[in-house]
Image (tube, rainbow, N blue to C red; front, side):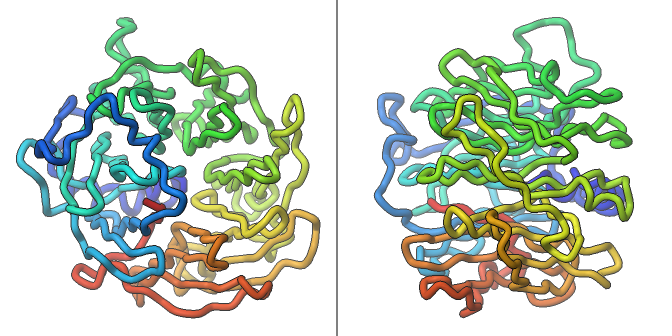
Length: 433
């Protein structure tokens, strides 16, 4: 999921003011550093591995609900039954916490099953570790380092190391190498302490174009390498570079390669198919291009089993009614069937739409018309149980998690779930825990 709503140029102008107004601290003026608020019974010993406590199956689902002014975190069991409604929200906090949640909150692309849930607060430039059983905030780390770094994703690498993608760039960075205030990077952190260890500068690896910045978006670990999608846009949002994914070696903390998608722009959400060794990436296109945006929008597939990795499939906008794909989410049911979302428009005369798409060029099927545009925030697939859940969050009508079954081979809508009945905030982000 791309930075929502603020990375979308149109939505930025409409929503940024109201969202900032709900913030309890200034993300550019305050750097909270590391705050550990865990009671002794919940504290994690540094010798333990949160990443290593991996269960055979997830316990359940964490949901971020948000209207972009406030946010609320809920927990469901694996079958979608509500366990804890609004256990952590913009109005709550814990002793020692520097920041409550803003309204622009996300979850990591890859979950850490069996450990605390990492909440990514993009507006407050902070990470909060939340115990899913007690809803207790365990610790918090500011990753703004004096500017609006806008963290987009979190990748756990070991008990003492993780990466954080920082979308923001600091035009007033100091020359000092140890204050980590440059942005446009992967921040290296110790997630247990927690503390900042270093950074990997991504600016030299942005695609060609006038003043193009990386604008690092999503990231995931696959086959021992970390793949980082770039929105690749100029700082004034006037120019878009071609689609690029960076390959980072976490043993050396070096960018070791790129995956390029010529003609495609503004790449974000990713998913990895381990059995097929395929990386799927959703790309939105140039949002300034009007009707021509769709020409630069696609869902692309890279085969990571080859050396170098190769672009093996590209599902263009023509497969989904000629509309640009959202780069906020992409999922797959198997090695061929992809779930993608096409964007609506601000007038809501055209809503978001969910599609079943084929990497092999088979027919596309429209599965859902949302009530509004810019509302379908995440798709979570449970392959073992043959179902998937879609976060469909219109603000002017009923916001629900929609459950689809595909166990029989056909995709059918089944039930709906209210993930935040107490505050009725729309569901945006989903992840296993």
